[in-house]
Length: 116
Image (cartoon, rainbow, N blue to C red):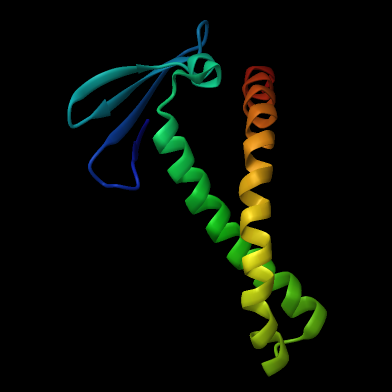
């Protein structure tokens, strides 16, 4: 299976070996080994992981703070005034929480994938 990467420059080729759960990443610079277990041990590109967490938490905090405050307040001018404040509070909290939950979520996801 080939999935276009968000940058549209790289293609991720998932050639999964069921025994080792390895795949290969095809980028502009060639093939590179990818191992989820190695990612969890800290050999994953930390800069990419941090950038992804910043972007993901930004999008989730923005959408969830808007949705949840709109449910509570209704789509009013008061809601529109309160939403940015709720987002400013939610984003750093979400980012800090991902630092802890990522370490739990990936091992659980890999175990579940093997069971399914």
